[in-house]
Image 1 (cartoon, rainbow, N blue to C red):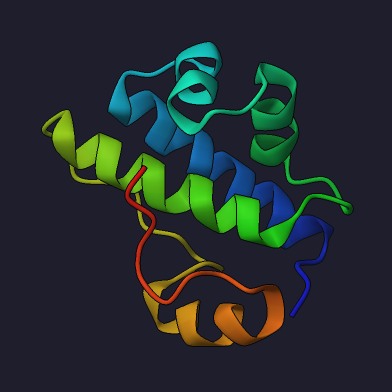
Image 2 (cartoon, rainbow, N blue to C red):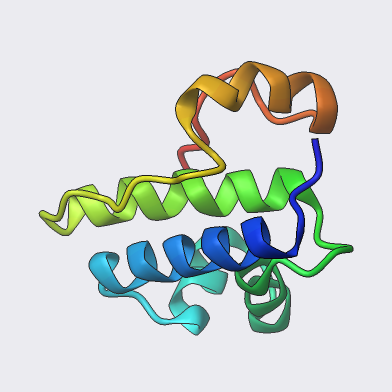
Amino acid sequence: MSLNAHQRRVTSAELRANLDLAGLDTATLAAQLGLSTAAVEDALDIGPATDPALVWRLRDHLESAARAAGAEPHEYTYLPERMRSAAQVWFGVGDHRFSD
């Protein structure tokens, strides 16, 4: 499954909403994940060439970080939990939530 342009825009907005709920900036998020700020920005923007496994990693990390900050994470329209098993097959996403 690949996301079309509209789905990428929606998912990017949802990721950024959880980034805000977590009270993080991209530099802090990058440091937490051991990535460059540019890699995090690219993944948050979800370009056509963005690694889907990285998007799921961000999704999971931001969801956990939002909860840790005392917020209820924004739900994901196109990356719901029920799609995790398919993402495992398609993209090699881990069989459990990332817990960076």
